[in-house]
Length: 101
Image (cartoon, rainbow, N blue to C red; front, side, top):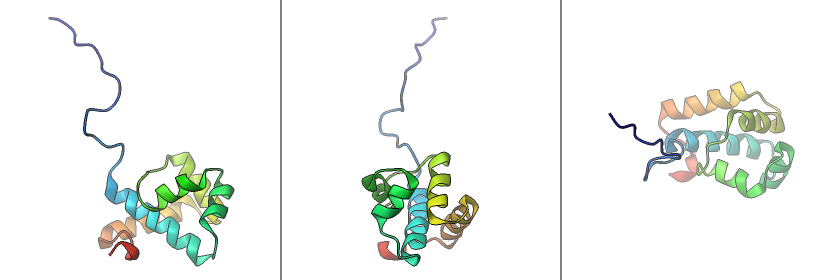
């Protein structure tokens, strides 16, 4: 029996994340940021990432790593648990963002 070579990377057409949780997380971050009156650029600076990356996270175009979720939470002055709880609540209620509807 001949072994198949291992192909690196994702299969063609696959995405790196599920869109629904990414949208819900992004909406939770945006809501927390705007409630504090913090600019997106300021939050990105506090979290140690580029503003464009923060924009992608808030729009649900990118799902951050656990380490980045923790840094964003710290930059917002809340816990990662609070951000995840808000994300789960948005997923359970079926709405990711009030702005997207």
